[in-house]
Length: 206
Image (cartoon, rainbow, N blue to C red):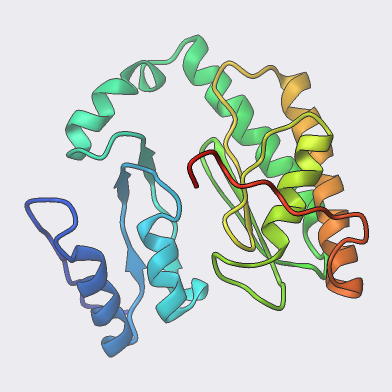
């Protein structure tokens, strides 16, 4: 099958590459792919474009690097992960545990989408509000804290971003707490706001 690829490039950050790419994808009914995400802040660029063209036309990133610099510089920080040995083995273990738990969640009515990229997993809830101000986020955040885990959802999307130093036992515990958060999400979708919910106090200076 013949296809045409368009490359959007720029020499700095915050100059409109994502917006232009999204506009092109909308206008040409194209797929969007950013193979290397340098500066993996959330939402990522693909999440932004997905809001415009739909998740089904997003190709997941091949690499997500932590620093918002050029990819070749960002990769230097993670160089040990690509040289084999213990760091890479730990990374692969985290990714495998993510995939196993995500597979077990498939088919839940409250879940709209499940995805992972390396050591980052994401659960998107099919909630009424949607977006960054979704009322589900504080309920999930509170439930996780009550169970000894810090999870910070963005709107209706719950991200699991464990440190590389986490043990397998600790990571499975995190996913057990994620299950409790999903149960709360299911209850909220049926009943509305959690009956015992209290307002979250604002951050100091907020």
